[in-house]
Amino acid sequence: MSNRTVLDPRKALGAVALLAFALLLPLGITDPSRLNFFILILMGAQLGVAWNIVGGYAGQVSLGHAVFYGIGAYTSTMLALSLGLSPWIGMLAGGLLAVVFSLAMGWPCFRLKGHYFAMATIAVAEIVQILVTNSEFLEGAVGLSLPLDRSGLAAMVFLSKLPYYYIILGLLVVTVLVAWAIERSHIGYYFRAIKDEPEAARALGVSLTRYKLIALSVSAFLTAVGGSFYAQKEMFIDPGSVFAGAMSIKIALVAILGGVGTLMGPVLGAVILITIEEYSRTLFGSTGSGTDMIIYAMMIILVAVFSPAGVMGLLQDLRRHLPGAGKTSETR
Amino acid sequence: MTADILLQVLVSGLLIGLIYALVAVGLTLIFGVMDIVNFAHGEFLMLGMYASFWAFALFHVDPVIALPFTALLLFAVGVIVYQTVIRRVLKAPMLSQIFATFGLMILLRGLAQFFWKPDHRLIPHSLVSGNIALGPVQFGLPQVVAALGAVGVTGALWFFLHRTRLGTALEATAIDREAATLMGIDGQKMFALAWGIGAACAGLAGGLIATFFPIFPEVGSNFILIAFVVVVLGGFGSVTGAFLAGIIVGLIEVLGGFLIGPEYKTAIVLSLLLIVLLVRPKGLMGKA
Image (cartoon, rainbow over all chains, first blue to last red; front, side, top):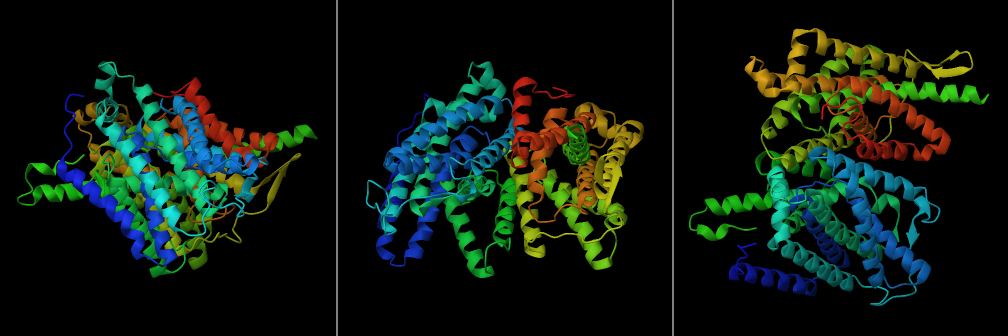
C-alpha cells in the first residue's frame, strides 16, 4: 500500500496517445468488414483484460470463462425479449448474475489448487452449456434472436458498425481502468501475494478464498458485460457460440499470449490473436483447417517455455537489454 | 423386464467405466510423479484412435493387432513431449506449466485437424464385431474386448508399479521426489517414463475404443473431463483409486443418462466432481 507511486508522465502520455489513436481510427476506415476486424480486437481485448484480473493478478487460471460470457449474453437478451428492457440495464443485470454465479462456483472450486482449479472451471462451464442447450425456457440449441425493429442507443441496436466500435472501446477503457485500479490498490497486492506466495499470504492473515472470490467475481462481471455486448452486436446467440469451450479457451489465450498479470498485455494479445485468426483464414481458406490453432498453440508453448510473462514480457526484456533504456523500463 | 434393462445399463456402465479408468490412470500417474496435470491427455487418446484408424486404412491391420504398435508409438510421443516441452517448465511457475500442456492440447488438436480433416471417421469392419448375449443382457463384442483390454493394461501397470524394480522406483518418485533422488533414482528418467507410460495408457484406451467410437480431432475433449472427474474421485495420484473411480463414474454416467436423460449424462458426471470436492476433497484413496 505504501508504494503507491505517482503517475509516470510518460506512461500517462502513452495511454492518452493510444486512446486518441483508437478514437480517431474509424475515421480512416470505410470498409465495414475492416471496422468489424477492429471491433473484434477490442472485444477480445476487453475479455482478456477481464480474465487477467483473476487469471493473471490472482494467478487462478480459469478455462471456463465462457460461462460468464454466456450468462451476460443470455441475461440481457432474455430481459430485452421478455420485458423489453434496455440492454444497458440488461448488461448490468447479466454482470450481477455472473457475480452471483461466480461466488457459487468459486466456493467449491477454490478448494482446488493450480492445475485442478483450471480443470474444474472447464467442468462447470461444460455443465452450464449442457443445461442451457437442453433448456426449453432459453430455447435450447436453437438460440435467441433479437428483433431488428427497435434500433437506436437505448436498444443498443445500430445499422452501422460505428456505434458498436465506440461502445466496445468505452467498455474496454472501463475494464482497463478497473484492472488498473485493482493493480494499484491493496487488493492488487493481496492478489499477487496469493499468486506468488500463498502460504506466506495466509500466514499474514490474508484470507485466500475471500480474495480469490473477489478476483473471480470482478472478472466475471466484466466478462458478462462483454457477453451482453456480443449479443447486441450479433443480434443472435446460441449455446454453441457464447457458452462454448472454444470461447473459454480464446478468452484465456488472449491474456496468456499478450502477457499474464500485465495491464496492457491482454490488449496486445488480442491484436496478435485476432490478426492471426483473420489472416490464417484468408491464407489457408475456410475455418476448421486447424492452422490458426497450430499457430497460436506454438506461440503459447513458446511463451510458456521461454517467457511466462507473454509477448509483453518479451518486449520488456528486450527494452531492458537495449542500451539507454535505463530504469524507466519497469512496467506493471 | 425392468430388472433386465437395469442389468443391461449396469453392464454397459461397467464396460465404459473400465475405459475411463484406463484413461485416468495415465493422468493420475503423471500427476502423482510430478504434480503436473496433462491437459493434452485426451489428445493422446485421440492420437491412439488415429493410429488404429491409419493402421487399418493404410495397411489393413486390425485395431486389435495394432494395439502394441499404438502403445509403443504413444510411449514415444509421451517421452518426446516430456523432453521437448515439459522438462523445460518443471521449475517454471505453475501458470507456465498449465499453459505448456494446454498449448500442447491445442497444438495436437490443430495438427489433427490440419492433416486428417475435422470429419468423423469410423473403422468399418474389424476382427471383433457383433453382439454376444448372456441371458437377457446383450453386449457389443468390441466393447467387451475393449473393457477386458483396459483391465489387462491397468493390471499390468499395477504389477509394474508394485512388483518391478523400475516400477517401484517410479512409485517412490511419486511418493517422495527428494528421498527417491537421494536413493540414487534418476528423477528426470522417472519423469520421462511417467509421460511415456501415461501417454501409452491413453493411446491404448484410444486404440481399444477405435472400433466402436467415432474418430475426430476433438474426441479427446470429452474424455479429458471425465478422466479428470475420475482422478479427483479416485484421489490425486492413486492408480488403484482411479481404477475404482473409473468404474463408478462409468456406472453413474450410464445410470444417470438412463434415469434422467442421455443428454444430461456428461453434466451428471461433471456435477459429481463438484460434489466430491465439497464432501471429500481428497477422493476415495487420495494422499492429501
